[in-house]
Amino acid sequence: MDITQSSLVLILITLLAATVNGALGYGFSSITVPVALLFYANRVLNPALVWVEVVLNAYVLWVNRASVPHVWRRAVPMIIGLAPGVVLGTSLVHRVQPSWLKLATFMVLLPLILLQAAGFRRPIRDERRVGLVFGGGLGVLYSVTTISGPPLAVMLSNQGLTKQDFRAGLGLVRLAESTFTAVAYYFAGMFASESAGLLPYILPSLVVGIPLGVRVIRHVRPETFRRVCMSFDAWVVGFGISTLLRQLHVIETDAAFSVLAAVGVLDIWLLYRFFRNQTPGTVAPGPQPAPATQ
Image 1 (spheres, rainbow, N blue to C red):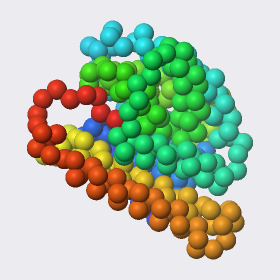
Image 2 (tube, rainbow, N blue to C red; image 1 turned 45 degrees about the vertical axis):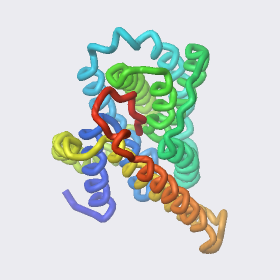
Image 3 (cartoon, helix red, strand yellow; image 1 turned 180 degrees about the vertical axis):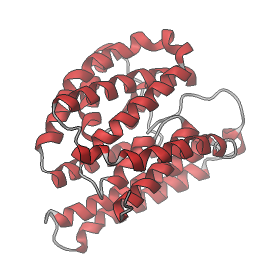
Image 4 (cartoon, one colour; image 1 turned 90 degrees about the vertical axis):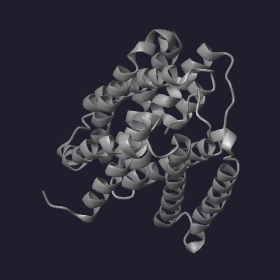
């Protein structure tokens, strides 16, 4: 197995992502995709990650299976909406020019990451009707990027779910979307040898990273750990947008990196606000609301 620069980056970023997933129970794709897209096209990267996501999401659902009876009815509208969204998203991955698809992916991810970093919360009242439409959009986003956590977190964590119910709902929806996407990719002929060739670089990272994350989180406050991960994603996505704006000749000069500068300034301010508000009262042990996810 030849180790190239791109494969070395994939090994390191999936190791970090697996550690995050082991610590928090989510976050594998959100950490992996922004970095890996700098080296691989969506149509190569996504099929490899989808198979990994099927296994990870099944594991999350199994661990939280006791809470499934409490949340499955609330998840059904989203799951129904997923199918047409996945079909549309798969068509986009299969047809759109890779560089433009990367740019569109980053442009969608950036506000979602910043909303999570800002701790955005807004309860949704008409949950069933919104859930159906939301599921369609989620299916498009996941099949294009293999990421669905940020918007799904806003939908689930704002609805007053306990931590276990949140994780069970997350497992249900994400297992459905990853399974639907795997089937759609299969019929679209996207499971090529190039994608399968990435798995030997990804799977060892999972074996090492997930147990490592379980140990790390015992010594770090989960919300702080999550917030640092969001900061990392924001900077990577900002760099990706700036680089692609130059590559696609949307902005010909170094002015393209003003996007990265703006993201950096905003993220530093959000980090300052987050740590400033970390008083002893906010970190006291006790029941916690469902966390935001990636």
